[in-house]
Image (cartoon, rainbow, N blue to C red; front, side, top):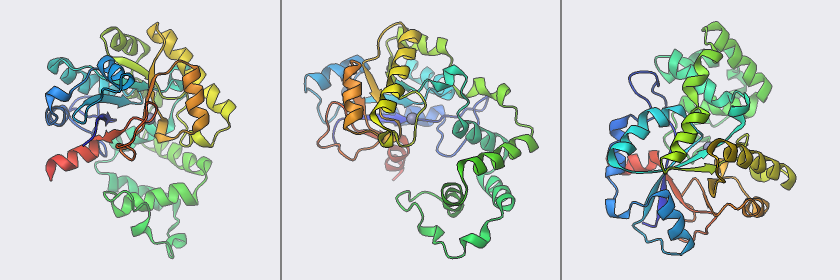
Length: 302
Ligand SMILES: [Zn+2]
């Protein structure tokens, strides 16, 4: 095993954060953290120093959270506090300008409204009525890089990614929100951390890092000028929130190219994480490896 970050996204509790696909409860989170050699743990400041001094050892690891999710603050942070650990938090900022990021809202709506994800899938398939166009599609082998997707996961993603435009997909989902009485304004504070919570993290020796402004799926396909706008905006807003300049970050959806790295260096960013282990044996300062918690959990169980 080589040095790497542990990457976390969604958490649930029995209170305000509903369970969803891949979400962790606090017990499981604690079990994952405790499964790593405590001697290898590095705080964010120690991690940055070790990277820059080329002193990372194979047993070194650190903790990272992506996307400014409120469930991380409510469920995972108390565990970190109990164990005395600090983490990196990578924050995209469009949500702090009033942008309502649909992917996160729809995920929450589905988890909150339907007893099982398959109940949602059935309602969705009925609504879009596209089975006739799936006759010759090999759904079972769609997205085969994700072995844990169910047949319905694959079918849903195939329809969303290939048969519907973004606008058509959003229309279907907005109609569902209406039909089931999901109030976006009421639920928004449950989805993302507040500016104050981000500031508090920074004050408590956690490290806040860049993650682009709007979190594009394919940042690397944007022209350099748009990539620069993404990161300058994100960097400026984070600087304003935490009253200091970020020095680290994570590539959103693991997407970057040489232009991105130049832009990040221009901003004074010193280290960046990827979101997989693909280059774990030959990483660079701007492509540090991370393991997704679902993979860690699967290895724990097997
Ligand atoms: Zn992200």
